Image (tube, rainbow, N blue to C red; front, side):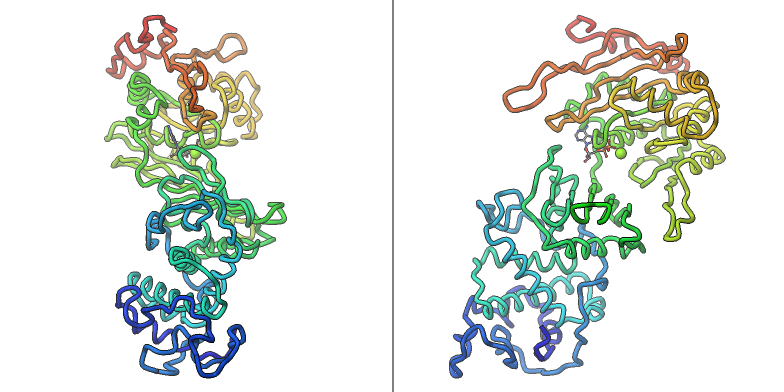
Length: 543
Ligand SMILES: Nc1ncnc2c1ncn2[C@@H]1O[C@H](COP(=O)(O)OP(=O)(O)O)[C@@H](O)[C@H]1O
Ligand SMILES: [Mg+2]
């Protein structure tokens, strides 16, 4: 690329900074005038336009201020520009124009037949531009000027490259290309448009050629692609480097949280066989509230009232479910039922909970450093939080030995604790708790562990992600105690699936089973009185 072109573009771009888009300078961007046409006299073949002093699209307008303090041909791309955070990204996806079949504008339609050509073109523009602009210089500008400078620069270089290569594209495609180059420079490349889309909750990159998203609860394959593994790695470095992290063959796994709260997991070859994988769980600014869950049919108003009473009445509750079933969301909502005057300590692997409470101390684990040292586990944090005079302990998710510490805390005066765990049925949750308690390394007999569980945990809230993408609380189950060697459970509310309607939606009913929980007296001791009707099915059938 270094074909001896003077790198005065930066200076010219700078002159353009505050001018409106597409205004004076490179304004009437002579759309695709083949290089030859732009330079009539010397009849040179279009393609062979190697070292003309000024490339066509840029040749005329600005006063020749030739070699200004010649910005060094320092690449913008590699580590230079920190991840700008997709929150500030310039334009919502919706401005990219109407989606047509195979258009570049729709990440979910059929792929554009020339998608790879466009990607190559985007790279070309990006590389040319990065030789022209000095990253350090860009840093000195405010965000708006920076965006505007880049956008104008990209438009110029796009016109120029298009003319040189006689690369056909429509105006709409050009608009998208400009946005894509901008995303490549200040954002996360091909996935930036997905991160901006508010309907998308999760973005999953499975190697360069496959990018799935979760949209409205459904997994959907997008048509976005990276060029190759190196391109994915480049974006991975852009994500992790500003967080002081590094990913390479020696350290092929990385978990991190972006400045905007989104959670990221990265795993690369040789562990990820088909190419570097990125999973981003986007942070939702508007967390779902209990009324949303009732509206979605995740639970009924009666179940919501019941859970509210259980939290206020200091029951120990485990939210159980598979990955993505909505456990953390439910835990967050339950936590917000805690009375305002109580001191809460939260312990999480990656802080996700957003409690709208005054008195909260949030703790987060620390992974080991490059030498494998310095790890602080959930278990250590749970132990520590017991020394912090908590009135409520909330553990984001229990996965291992910390389970025993949590059970002991629940059994020794820290009632009202909340946590989540991974299981598909309430009974499975009990088994999981047993297994996790055994991981603690304390050599307790199984019966003793079961007794701990039976006396510590009052309630299991079982949540599921159903085939249609909806989330349901399928069981609210009381842990009653022990009978012989067995922990006894009693369902208070359950979901019964009746079938699937013509739109693929699951049809079913959430109802009380008619059984009243034994812990009612504990709630009453806290002055909480639930109407008996809450436990009776609306159609009067019990269940
Ligand atoms: N009741 C619900 N209905 C619809 N979507 C939900 C519900 N609960 C959570 N979600 C969405 O599902 C995704 C996963 O939720 P999360 O609570 O993080 O699940 P988990 O902790 O079980 O992995 C999020 O995008 C969230 O917005
Ligand atoms: Mg979770």
